[in-house]
Image 1 (cartoon, rainbow, N blue to C red):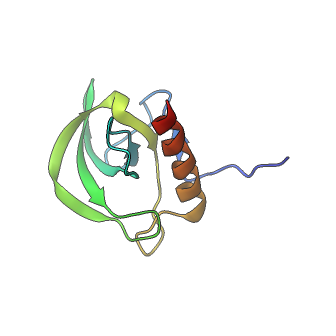
Image 2 (image 1 turned 30 degrees about the horizontal axis):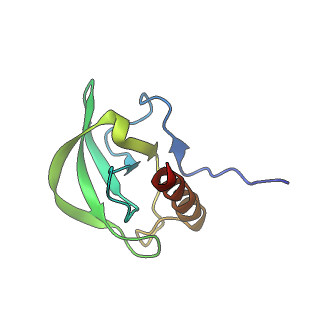
Length: 106
């Protein structure tokens, strides 16, 4: 069966491609009401300084709260693109739903 590649997000297996300005999906252990998205402000050797975004799979994403530091290992996807209305693209939303469900089952 052919499955179209999702071009607007990448699985994090290393963090070299995560740059300031990237939107990342984050796994918050114990909080299974995803998605959790953040915009990277700064990359350090062991962490990201991010601004949390507030939104949902079908709603607009907007900046929320101030900047915070998170460990790099909590980022599970990066290079997520929002459409012209500030929403996650349909294919990315479907992929994130499946992935967060798998994380919750681990």
